[in-house]
Length: 341
Ligand code: ADP
Ligand code: MG
Image (cartoon, rainbow, N blue to C red; front, side):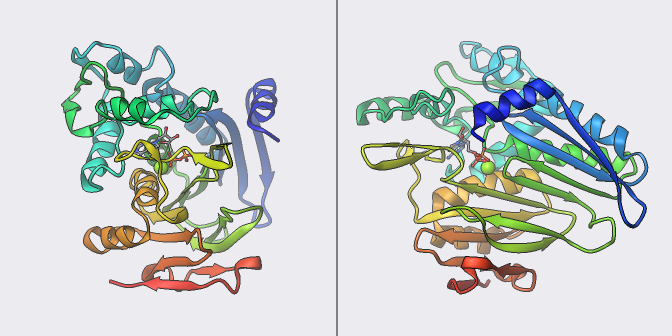
């Protein structure tokens, strides 16, 4: 199903909810919504899970209302259209942005939340795809620099001509808020599927780890399976959103140093971390960096693991995943490199 027809099905149903009894007696409740430009399913187990998933869905809507770059009533939109004047934002927007800005800093700008003017020029927000000319890109890149954004408490200033977009990090940050909400509601076991982001609260209801498939970036099926619990597993790849022109493929993850789709030799990056915000921001940033720099970043910063699928068909994982990631299917014989400290 393409995105438009999927969207219309979801709009027709407005909200899909489901529930089921589990063999071990625990109730399962799930809600599926279209938000933040993707399909999201929130599943929780045990008593209170029905109300909790509904509350989580409302929370997604509320955060989308604050953080969306396209909605004219969002706080990010207001900051982007203030002509360079300071605006006051909610604690949520300030925290989400602060978290993203610290990753822009630590990745040396491989993640840059001010890339939006360039993303727009390629048509990734509207679907009116085009390949911008070199001089158009260099003019737009002059407006890209996360260090020019000022966030002081709840006061946000976006210099005139610049535009913020939390698209590469907002879903992960939102996931962290939902996990906290579910935990406070007394839920011990839940799974969030927010587009390519998976976030887990606890283990499966029977106490065993969740088994998360890492998608094959070159086709159908998956590269392997990761056993995971109480953490985020976030994948970014060129296959998620792209267009073709003159025999070339152009995807939606851009290298802020060139303004062009990042071609670092990687086909997908999966980040495993306790924090969804960290995992989301880094999945994009490490895709831009490429394998060698990604390993360097991991060695100097730590606090996460990765699964890198290269365009040559090899797979690299950090040593922390050695015991819980398994290649499978067509990938069973692929070259698997273990990255060590
Ligand atoms: P997805 O949203 O498909 O899961 P990502 O988390 O990797 O994928 O985010 C990609 C989105 O982030 C793009 O659609 C674009 O809006 C924005 N973006 C692209 N390149 C960058 C970058 N280098 N830094 C920050 N944001 C980016
Ligand atoms: Mg991301």
